[in-house]
Length: 207
Image (tube, rainbow, N blue to C red):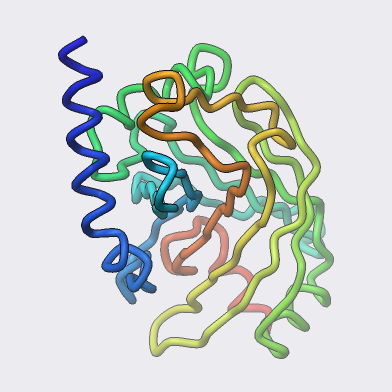
């Protein structure tokens, strides 16, 4: 019961700062190498509050086939590392995302031809399809990506718009929905540096 009361108070404070939360546009710092999720919830039936969770404990690499003509990108992040600046919410995330079945959220891309990768860099955008592993399931997805050239690396940003239902994830109400109700909307955000992606240097060499 004490936890419900604390959560109730926290959500009231979130309502009072809702305009500030919605005004926040920047999830990542410019030089960060991180992943994040963004969703919304209704609080006390009167306000929609944005929820953002982020982790910079990212492992990313490009695996090349024997000829070096194709690459596959693998990106993963531990479920328990996701931080939304709300300890009560974050301690429930491992159970919600079935960490016992999928310890790391992982994306494995389809194999990409070297010419396709070069074209993406030249056009500074592209679509990357693959399999997202989360909550004990594997789901075909497609990330919309952009590529920005920096002095020492490429900044790789992207997003995937989906829903909790599409990923077979059930997010519970808070206090039977009296305090907060989750929305279906879910956005997965990518903000990666090529100099921190193992194997990406081979792409730069071949340009």
